Image 1 (cartoon, rainbow, N blue to C red):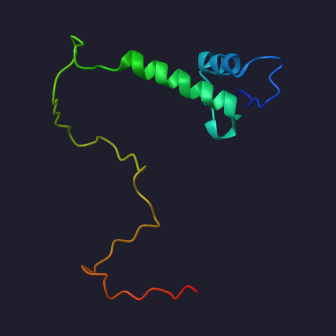
Image 2: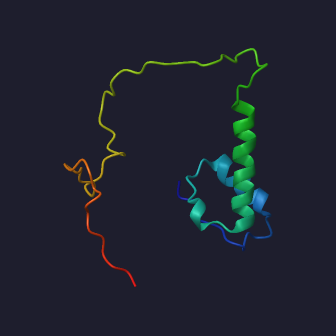
Image 3: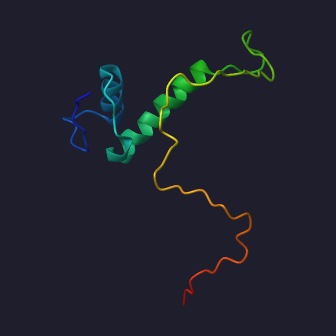
Length: 102
């Protein structure tokens, strides 16, 4: 990482050139900070990569309805846990009072 996020000032480079350079450099890029042209180019490059790796009917590697059993995780990742979530003990929330909004 460590590459600066380029905006419209690309030193004369096109959005495609800037996107390609970042992908080749392996930088983690925050796509929220790119201009529309560069974001569209990233999306195009991701679609090309997806299409290259996709296995579709007719492909020799294609298998219909593959089901896989996974073992328990060796370590807790924590990404799906939140301190904000509090499970409800109530089965029915129909009688819950909602605030009046004008």
